[in-house]
Amino acid sequence: MTDAYIAADNIISSLGFSTSENMQHMLAGETGIRQWEDQSLSPVPFWASRVDDIRLRKSFSAYADPKDFSRFEQMVVCSVKDALSHTSIDVSDEKTLFILSTTKGNIDLLSKTDYDSKTGNPVYLWQTASKLQQFLNLANTPLVVSNACISGLMAIIVGSRLIRAGKFEKVIVTGADLVSEFVLSGFNSFLSLSNGPCKPFDKNRQGLSLGEGAGTVILTSDLHAAKAPKIRVGFGFSSNDANHISGPSRTGEGLFLAIRKTLEKNKFHVDYISAHGTATPFNDEMESVAITRACLQDIPVNSYKGYWGHTLGAAGVIESIAGAHSLVSNQLIRTMGFSEPGTTHPLAIIDTNSKAPLNSCLKIASGFGGCNAALLLYK
Image (cartoon, rainbow, N blue to C red; front, side, top):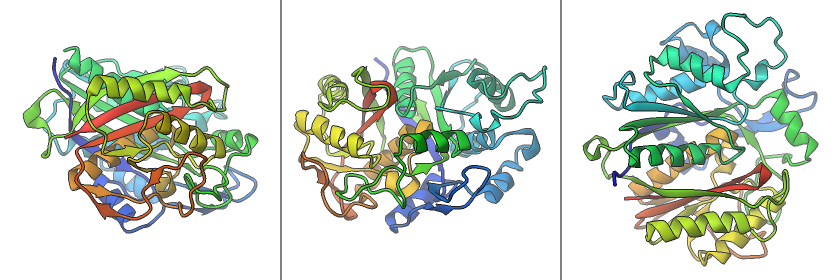
């Protein structure tokens, strides 16, 4: 069976427009979450992590006129282009597939009414994917993965499965989402937003911080095309606990099942866990239960949400990339915002940057509707 390897990647967030730039700021202990006053998004100030508009337009201008593309589309294109610049991949090759991961896509255009009958409604995810296919000159019709907050991780799992099945030799996975009025009002209705930068797994956590960004990971079946050290994408699994439309299972059943299946299939020791860690009371508690049930409570675990917020459909992609780079550099990155344990099941939360011999990373995610996913990355 063919293995899947990471050939290249990119992260665009409030902390930078490349993976290396993001990792440098994170190691320096910097967060991209700050307070915003933007009447177009919210009548009151809010805390979030947002991508620099001026820098985004300038970066995208190297490829096309920003007026012809939405912010969402600009982020996707810039992320894909940067990742591709580190490879010799021919995107027009029929053995190359593009997967778009997002929860809301161009949802910020929802109020727009003067749609062009020729180009259709840009809010439809499949039409957004079609526009990106034409612009990027992709040979195959893209896949769209939209499954709440596990979308990004599921997209990587799907891409690696397609490579193992011999359907494609290269798979470009890009996850992206925006901080929009629709998303802000939605999370506000749940009273789940933090009045300040989020504090994953901390006793004094108040809720999540929203973030926007894009991440691209290019998967390949070609061992020689992968960067050194070689990072393999192991088997990953998803599950659904069918507990509640928004609340996670109190027993952690769904996430526990996804973790158990992943560990049984990979037969590999876990050195480090990249958790979902949204900093909401119920999510962090549920993860602590699931991790403990899987007997992984002593494994170092962190959350990246304190650096760039919850980026929704991009989260699983950019956090997997950060986890892979932690393996490459044998570097454990602290959980920004964490200071005092706040879950009933104690976990080995990483509270300071440190070096450690790392060979594998278990990435986990959970989302609305009871969906859960787990994936193992290893050298």
